[in-house]
Length: 371
Ligand SMILES: *Cc1c(COP(=O)(O)O)cnc(C)c1O
Image: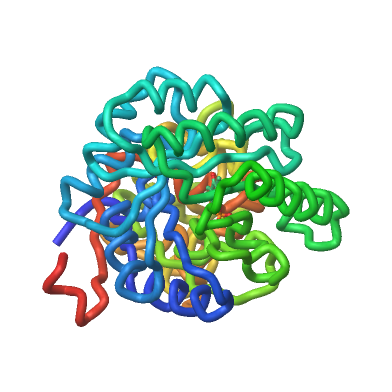
């Protein structure tokens, strides 16, 4: 029993989301568990996803890959976004596949001992990660030569879409076409990449033309659909006890900068969660929490460690829990609402929760033995 704030992660939601997404594509499903599984626990999300339809795992840096192997997971793991001096020898030794976005990266991978499995990464139009089109044909040629010498095995070609959350955006067809071109160029260079992957959550849910042989799914596993077309199950519930309650008169100034003044006499409740725990300060005076089954407003500035709720006449007592967010099924705010109050996306809320919040996991019944 935890007395303070508690984040509960419902892995049955992750299981349901994985099964739904796996059923939406004919290709394989890579569970992207970067950023600690979008804040939900990388190992928990990885195990749950692998048991419900995912066949592979994806992370950004190699540092995120090691714990998956240390935990004994044997599924293929792909790491993208590494500097050229990353430990590619260790990647090969740990059987971790790496994305190669440039000739310099390819050179570093070739120089490392062992035969590394690589995915050539093309920039499908974001000017972000991946090789520019001008550099792609040469990257494919050099990769083919490295393959013939046994230094690498090119198992995949990958790209990423910049506007998939809006299926109507013309940027999507540009991305699809550039990816198709990149695969053709790779084949023309003699490469035979078995994995060709472009889609993340939004494209997987909205555009089968992006599916190819695999989807890389992160947000969707934890209940976030950036395209807002599909109802997925949010997995997080954040609660905290009211540590103190006070009765105040109308006109009472609340918190730093006296940014709020009570309208009439009311009860104020103190909740021990603040921006250090990941509740955005910019949501001050907009956010709500659920107290005794009703929505109550957060008043005044959200501080580093605490926030104040106007309890009105709801009768709540010190020690009672309030729900900051959850799936929304009991009337509590959702992560999507918090994102709206903060002018951001759900991803930023779930990945930004602080380390001092106690965590608890609700296991999928038949997976409990694996936990
Ligand atoms: C994070 C990430 C994904 C997963 O995207 P979601 O929209 O969260 O499913 C896929 N591919 C790359 C390259 C990523 O960085």
